[in-house]
Image (cartoon, rainbow, N blue to C red; front, side, top):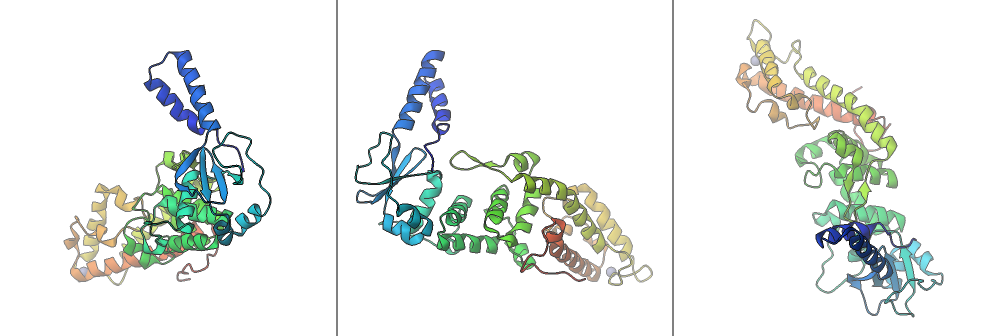
Length: 354
Ligand SMILES: [Zn+2]
């Protein structure tokens, strides 16, 4: 519960004032005028203002008018909150006197995602997350507001979807190819935050692994949400990612080199063939592409280690064995991810060979 954020409209106000090419003092006065106007007169939401709505919700500078009974049915928190008499607004508003007003400290963008799910409208089909291709903002709003207001159905949908994408299963992860949310890696920061908020630990190892692949600036500064606020890692998780990045890189390199074991009986030994020499020649070629050894992901497709390289240096049988060994090593590394990040035992996460 809070009054509208006075900082939000000011950024736009400055930009518009500059475009007007006003003098300094005129621009400043114009800015104050626009700021006052924006603070004083919240605007009705274009999507969720029902004329017969029974409760007005004000978030920042946006007014929603929706149905109290429906909100209460979906959320015990709203039910409790709305069971008390609501004070009338102290600010000028176009909301009718007989419609109680509640101020929320959520972003209007987040609330719209929630309202689209619980207030059916003509011409708008609600698609559960599992059946659609949701954006991060939608999944995040369901998780955060679902948790805050105990809208269990939306929270459960969100966590179910995240668990399928940030899976505990190595083969499922490999088959996905891209990172979740169309390879927009920075959203992993938000997923770590959701995991911490909701105690949904199974999505943490993969989300933290993706965070470790982010450029330093993105990892530290986070990314901008639609309302202009920044989604950043908590300080402890930021420290964890920075501290564990080296451990993850080391484990990835160890995993790769372990597959090229010259004493492995699966490779033709010197005398039968020169496949061991061929193996070393293949490994030597990777110097041209360091990203293949310590790339963004510890789990690239195994085919990358053969494509564009002279894998004919080894016979077909040895190439096949190497392929299997690389995959085995990746799978063992996968099993160790929670341990590498110091996350302890995570329910459902596979345990590797002792
Ligand atoms: Zn061979």
